[in-house]
Image (tube, rainbow, N blue to C red; front, side, top):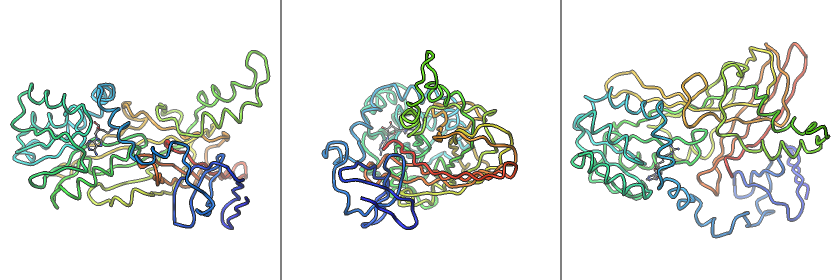
Amino acid sequence: MEVAIRWLKKLSLSQGDKVLLLNAVTGEWWWVEHNGHCGYVPANYLHGACEEEDSDVDDPWQDEEYYGSYKTLKLHLEMLSDQPRTQSYRNVIMQNSQALKGKRILDLGCGTGIISFFCAQLSEPEVVYAVEASDIVEQTRKLVEENGYSRVIQVLGQRAEELQLPTKVDVLVSEWMGTCLLFEFMLESVLLARDLWLKEDGVMWPSTARIHMVPCCADREYSSRVHFWDSPYGLNFSSLKPMAVQEFFSTPKPDYVLKPEDCLSQPCTLLDVNLKTIKIEALERMSSEFQFHVDCDGTFHGLTAWFSVQFQNIDSQEQVDLDTGPFNPLTHWKHTLFMLDQPMQVRTGDKIAGSAVFTRNPIWRRHLSVTITWSITSPSQNTEQNGCKVFPIWR
Ligand SMILES: N=C(N)NC/C=C/[C@H]1O[C@@H](n2cnc3c(N)ncnc32)[C@H](O)[C@@H]1O
């Protein structure tokens, strides 16, 4: 079936082909990806079957698997061991110790309760509601008891979506950030709790969140997975290279560590979200233009993204900034590398312009896809190269 949409490149599909649904944009047209190419398809051309069992689709938030991953200590150890992350929250609370006196605080997704402990230890809030949906919460209750904070910290073992509080709160603090900021979309739960339980003049911590991106050289990453096939043990395996690109670079690499010297230009800020005002429905699709001015000759292998969050002080204009990028101490989030299929040589003075669109998965609600469109103009080489690639995270 040839679906040639006038303003999009052709998406050739045949009966029985499987496509990745990226966005059920309207009832009639769905934005899909097939073999690395994306385009619109009439919704009525597609029927039901997701790869997984239909029963899975009954749980689009995959809550059993999600909360199951937080009931053991592995992820909590990783987060608590992340000094830049945990110390940022501690610094915010310390700097606002006076302002937090007598206040009502909601710590959403408290895990082992570390943020709630900082509040009770460094200030004298009236109450801290420590909300946690995974089974780790039974341990958290014990920790509150054993550390003598039962009078201040109230541990609530439930999902934020089911929360019932006696009154609204003055501060909603949460550590909700996932890969590429948005993955897990715990942010939706935070915004839901904000809308239901945060006072009109209440404070959100973090207050703002940003996604940053920079074009980069990633030679070792590309060579070890693609050039490797040129001549392993003297044999010519190069016909495997397209398969290697597809297998290793179709999704971003979430645990990449970008070195400052591999940046090809100054980074830019793609998204800047105000967590007090953003509406939940805005999370479905967020897009941003970018323009990078290449400031050193090199190979353009891909784009690396990271996030930063800012915590606004309650009684002053100052803020604490947690920046997980390559120019700051490494965090457990590391960086996210979006590798292009084909590296390109770029020179100082070249321009890499384009857009990044963050589209939430209409079915798997904790997942998203990032569509990156680029155009490289090189005055020195008098060339222009364009491209577009869709990166699911992770469906
Ligand atoms: N920072 C990263 N990566 N992960 C976020 C942190 C996730 C923690 O928040 C809890 N959590 C996530 N969503 C909710 C919710 N809706 N209600 C209650 N608890 C929740 C999880 O069980 C983890 O303990």
